[in-house]
Image (cartoon, rainbow, N blue to C red; front, top):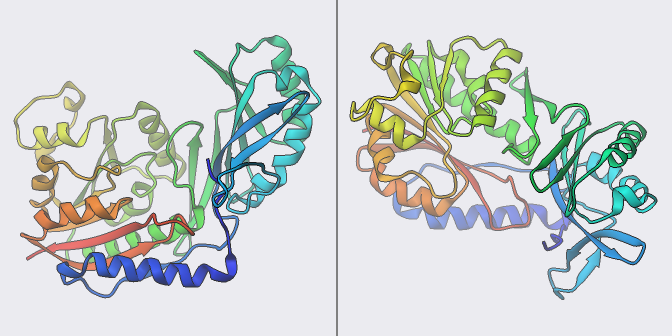
Length: 365
């Protein structure tokens, strides 16, 4: 992994260049003016994976210099949250001082929150024993964090395997359990801006009609918790079991009681809605009882498959959150045959890189 080049004094310039590139890439779609949502220029990433390199009795976090491509010791991680930077060196000093914590350790993963909670996963090329657990518990108490040990076919959770994040959206606070080794938005500050954009858009949509929302790829309920209040009912789908469990807990934490979640892929949900297949996982859900007018999709980098493209075109309003502008372009080529883009936004989740997160609102022509 390369150490990113972080130049806060150049952040505004690189963001303007990214926005210009996106505007040029989507010029053929006659889009409205691009809304731009910036990141903090430093300490914006709430999770990180750092490799551990061993030299004799010494070990350290190792990355590669982006210019020289040479390995280097990392003592400062400017894209990482302040909490990650606060913990990095005390953690490594404790690891170096302990043969049980150090032996065959090859990776450290940090998961932190804006409220300064931290979960640290120590990953090994060996099985972990009771002595490791004892020393890891002492380290956990010393640092005031939660620690998990991982090895092949082994996961040792000393207390909990999650942190609880609080996100602030338009004057409201939302609480989320974020589970180790599952997807969460890495840039919490920009995530709050994404949620606020989606919230305002949903509010505009539902001012003129009372209807239901279908959400595909809901993950841990990141968008669901914020948007549910604007709709009569919500049907959300997610394929990963760990995310489904986390989403249900997050609905409970936020008092959201009008959401039903189904563990289905987008392809399976499309088949169910088109009455092409019957799924036992939908046996207690009456799809015909929903009055859908709006669909929210937040697909992986591969974008929407052709079947899901056709499904979203049956909705009056489409909210599309994209982590890959190239597959978004491909999907819009089909969707814009029936719908018009009325809002488009760029969320700078990953400063100093070419990656761009986008949001698009389309309405039926």
